[in-house]
Image 1 (cartoon, protein in one colour):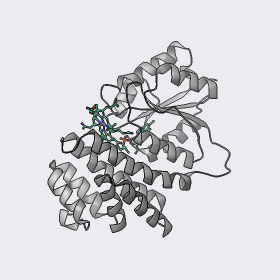
Image 2: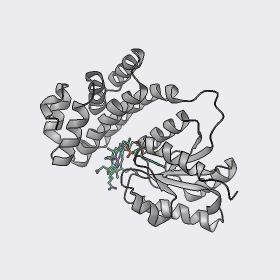
Image 3: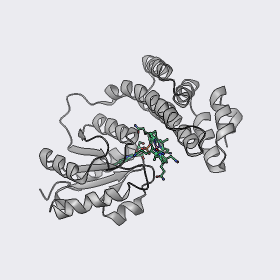
Image 4: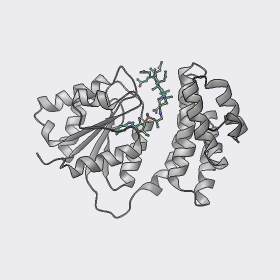
Length: 253
Ligand code: B12
């Protein structure tokens, strides 16, 4: 089992030691950072510090020397946000700091996106994606979108705070066989169910497969509200999208 001392980045090591108290989280983050290469730890540290210039520079350097974009994303950028989330929950940092961290993550993601984007491939299918009504979190949704696009899906991004009507309009307008909803707040999770009900009311439920995700969402919750699938992360989102297409999403069109 990795020890905190195995985290070579001094800043990250001190941060985990000071802010991560729950044993399971301490173990998970220690393993995550200790298992990441020094360059990736430095990117994670830049995200945690909210240093977007540094995150930008380190991401570019890593990609320039041929580091796999997924490694930069998972071991650097997303790994940094994991600690930010814990610090935010523990009131060690507040909204302005989290926004700075999110910005640092976004500048890194902006460099990764073109590398993951498929070129010249016939789209597998169109997916409408959005964060549900009342919810302004978009980092995870955007990661899913990047990965979906990189895997050959055409994605219509409705952004955040998306009403059931906006989801319905977009699915109809683009004839999309797949819809993905994201929610990060326990208070906005029920809006996923309300959107599914709106599709039923509009007599459109059979023509679209609906997948859901976001930190508080579980597969049980997804089942309960009548979604077709749940994905725990961006990689799972792509696998789920492919599975739903294979199962015949849009057959009822
Ligand atoms: C960044 C952040 C913010 C930023 C958002 C910036 C942005 N542009 O997104 C800001 C500062 C604006 C913010 C605001 C708020 N936040 Co906030 N935020 C976070 C934080 C720290 C990180 C979220 C994140 O980006 N994670 C990283 C991404 C990569 O992970 P992810 O979103 O889970 O996405 C992955 C998977 O879930 C999945 N996935 C996501 N969507 C989908 C969709 C599909 C279809 C699939 C298949 C998969 C999938 O794939 C993604 C990639 O791997 C979380 C803490 C946490 N642990 O989640 C709190 C958190 C979500 N926030 C919280 C709160 C309370 C708030 C505020 C209410 C705070 C306030 N007092 O104002 C406001 C609400 C604003 C609003 N109306 O939405 C709470 C929610 C508590 C709860 N149980 O509901 C959390 C959990 C923090 C905490 N207290 O513990 N927040």
